[in-house]
Length: 273
Image (cartoon, rainbow, N blue to C red; front, side, top):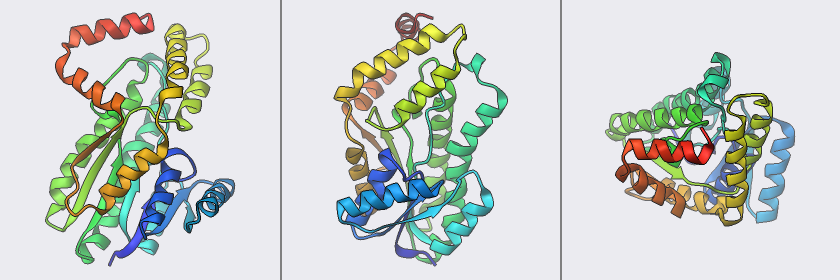
């Protein structure tokens, strides 16, 4: 049976994940965050102490099926927040099979595995909450980050299916779709672009980085997303989707109303493709 006080958040060492474990602790949960190393666990402990809340950590690589099963069966969480992920920047031509497979392992298979493992405990407890952190790029697509967007599109489709499948058990499945926020994902993107040196798409990558640097001063803080996740985890009747950030809301409108040929043309002009 699920423990109604346990909320497990993956990828909790920084950014949205860290803000989420703090937010859930403030809301009265026994907040547990998964991290991949002791140094990251110490960073979470320090942030929790600074915030005046208690957060536990577990060492977990979300791509390890046995590790996931052990953690979920031990904690029996009533709330699972699937947040672990990374930028996966790269043109389709620049990304090999192994890179693509790793992205899907981390951002598609892992969250569905966590959900699958938690569902029996939630069902026995009479309900639960699965919050999947997607992105505005779960409903929109731009060049040079197609594999990241493919993962988020897949997460959205699977979440939609799971929401209907789990509803009869009292389990609510929620998608949170942030726009641009100040997190470590942008530094990851810079490192990935450096690895693409010599690519025919290098000028486009550089334009992405320039645009990101210009946008960072007006990006929101991860705590804003965490508050939405907190509401999604506790609302009696949560929405199926929460768009977070003015940029996400604007891009969702553009995605719906702009003809594909126009979107393609603008993307090519902006990125020099």
